[in-house]
Image (spheres, rainbow, N blue to C red):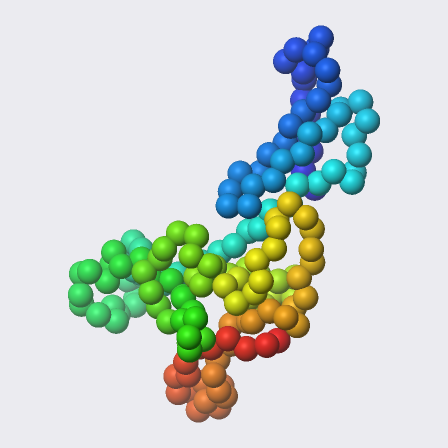
Length: 157
């Protein structure tokens, strides 16, 4: 919880303050400062992109060998995306706000895919069931057992 001392700009006006969270699911609440209630809360989603960093800046660690010598890859802005038909996890160009590219971290540390869950009203708190979400996982155990590469996929927790 965050608090901030505030001095009224116009002390003769009614003691109301409007608090707003801007964004795709913006939320606002008007509070009376004479009778502040804990029940009035702002809710918002904090989605993330999972990005291939090198494709955004072109910069990389000096000890890391480039995967490709193609200069276009440095500006491709690739993020994890999920194909709606196959549910395969792919690298695609970032498209701001595209639900198939949005992820959120759960309280238990899992990366849940936003595009595979039902949209909900961000103005109302609705704790999402982790059982109904799809999370990022590897397709098999080979990456753990014999150092081979495995594709990424969505899976129930």
